[in-house]
Image 1 (cartoon, rainbow, N blue to C red):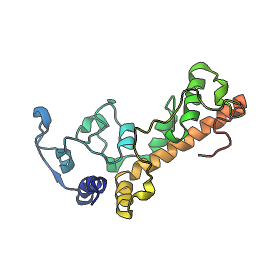
Image 2 (image 1 turned 180 degrees about the horizontal axis):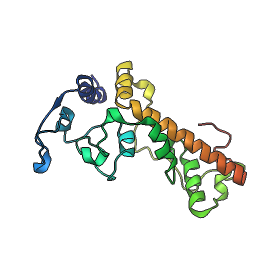
Image 3 (image 1 turned 45 degrees about the vertical axis):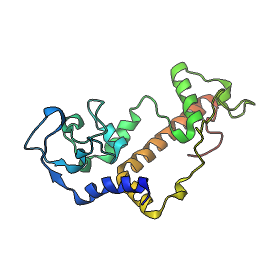
Image 4 (image 1 turned 135 degrees about the vertical axis):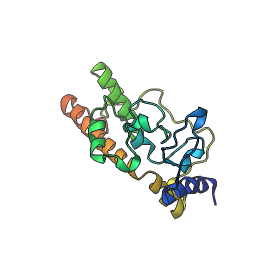
Length: 194
């Protein structure tokens, strides 16, 4: 079994079994009445739906774990209101999408300064942000298509809510791009769709 698949299996097994137990928390924190998922034994790391969980974090920290229950306003993952995700995302001052890195930088520039450089206009002869280049560090090209079906399944199970959250963010990003285009006439996506 490849290492990545083994890692995914490790965390998925706790979701699947819903294995709860009371235990002593790090640094002397202890409450007998808490029923805490056993996966926190793994140095408090919990990769399940990390992005969605962060949206509900009230303190802005400890989003990598689920055992800091109070930071999540008493909300467990199974209780997340996905309709609230859209509202939370709409309230973000800025949304950037990795796959649209250049358009995201241009949108950020517009939001900060109320204008952007001509490199952001696809009609410009210079239609790439200066100095932007990809550094590969010698890693061979790879693709998600190289992963087997089981690995795809496990990734999906650990990110079920995050997949929905990301789609909502992409839709909001697209709406903001359209508003900028309507206001300025500049298409930051160069006729591409997200």
